[in-house]
Image 1 (spheres, helix red, strand yellow):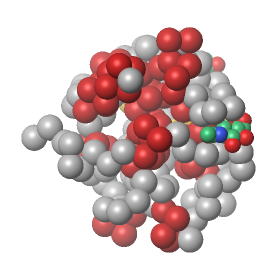
Image 2 (cartoon, rainbow, N blue to C red):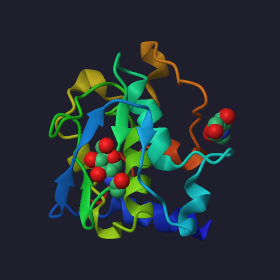
Image 3 (cartoon, rainbow, N blue to C red):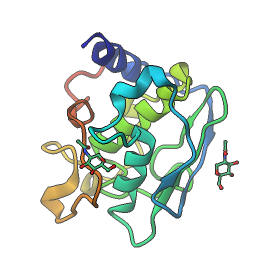
Amino acid sequence: MSCLVYFIIVSLMAVTLASASTIVPRGPQTNATCTSDYDWTDNESGLSPCLLASYLLGSCLTGDYGVWALPADSHYNPPNVGTMSSTPCSCSWSVYNLLSACTVCQGNVNSVLSWAYYKAECPDDDLSTTTFYPYDKGYELPEPASIPYWATQNHDSAELA
Ligand SMILES: *[C@@H]1O[C@H](CO)[C@@H](O)[C@H](O)[C@H]1NC(C)=O
Ligand SMILES: *[C@@H]1O[C@H](CO)[C@@H](O)[C@H](O)[C@H]1NC(C)=O
């Protein structure tokens, strides 16, 4: 539980000065390595938040997305800022939560973007106020991904002003 609280606090920190890195089509795959301190972020069968994010990003597209290891002090670019396009998946709470966890678990604790900053270039059509993954738009989670509970949280209501 303390880990979850820690993650939520960290994920609410609005740090945008770190340099950005790219998420590119191909995959789903990742070569990002989470330190063992963050094993709790893995899904039940051990998928890291980085690989899970890759699965989820790919589930909205014909191409898949690789989530590559971050250099120190960098973060993943938000949708429509770098190479990652805006989709109902990339703009979902779950992908935001997973990419944040993926950033933190690589040791880049101070590089996590706020939800407000992350979603800024997402059109309303790609955002949801009701669900963490666009099931309501007909998308389906690919096997073997399933989303851990902590990654289903909506940050709209918890946003630090
Ligand atoms: C991860 O893979 C990408 C794409 O192949 C590559 O550019 C990058 O150097 C790799 N990073 C590490 C740490 O292996
Ligand atoms: C985790 O990933 C595995 C594949 O390694 C999958 O079979 C399983 O359903 C997933 N479980 C959860 C809770 O995410």
